[in-house]
Length: 448
Ligand code: GLU
Image 1 (cartoon, protein in one colour):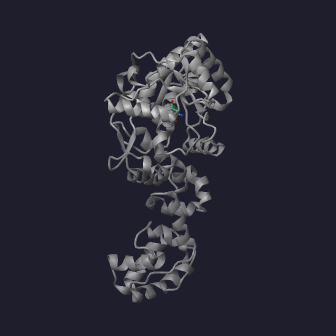
Image 2 (cartoon, rainbow, N blue to C red):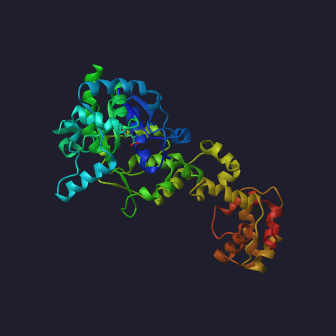
């Protein structure tokens, strides 16, 4: 059996750490199994879906390295959905309802007042022909619900294990709105069957949907005369470091924001591939290596904690080990040259910080003068250009000889004057980049 999976975002918002996990796990599983990874754009909601969001999602997936084998949009398949819906109507599985939202709300309120679950009472199944014509004369248009079996539906979830949902506890789902718009459920079931999806991997907010979808898929398979219900794997959702849901913070946790912030795609994929497993998080640039270690059995059911600090730490490790070639194109975007990169990479957590160090060595700074006697003396001891890897040690030795200063009292005034910062990359590396002329000026207290 060839594994076929899909990532099915609705283009109504950006990808973020929460929803990109489903993309990553689908991708890892497909690659591990030598299968296919389909990108499906769930854009049946024509009002909220935009091409800009769709393009943004694709850009993010590409940046992360999660390339897909095939893509399609639900909005291009309305003909297929109409054909299946027609068969379901004929079979009485899709039935028209005329309640207004207010009437439905009233019913739910009454049910709750009586201590009953607010499940749709199927009043529409009892409509007489006269009632239906009366509704139509009033100008009401029907919405369409799927008739569930009202029996327990079970599946062996690859992450959650044996799972049962009694569809008697769920309202018959509305599949088509009164304006004729398909909600995501029916198109999703038809697509999964038609595309031969073998595994549906997604967040556990879809567990109840799975039971409903299994029943709808069975009806679709009958209508199509072929197909199979896929296996399901519902992963737990992310919570913040404080244990609270992430939903309110997701804006700041978009993949786009992380990219603009100079985070490495590998930091994001390394962390998200292991969050929620007992496996250690290690920096891994090679997605295929992550795929090789992917196993549903290693994913726990408990919510996974996402801490942006972990992402920073991982990012720093990845950068420290990164050869120039691995980051060259993005460094170019930040205007950072190879020598500056080699000098600063051990000291930064984000690529964007390399640009700050470029400004320090190549641009102008106001030196911080802590010990004027020492730095003035030092200014006269700076060797001539070109400075090289050994220049700093020679220079410091001469300053020490001349001033008698040692340790922190020697190094800190020099660092503060030359960089304006108390901390940073090795001075031996920065010194040649700053150059003799600038070094003399800064040590003399002049902006340079
Ligand atoms: N478009 C749906 C969502 O983003 C897809 C869910 C699914 O994978 O079936 O929630």
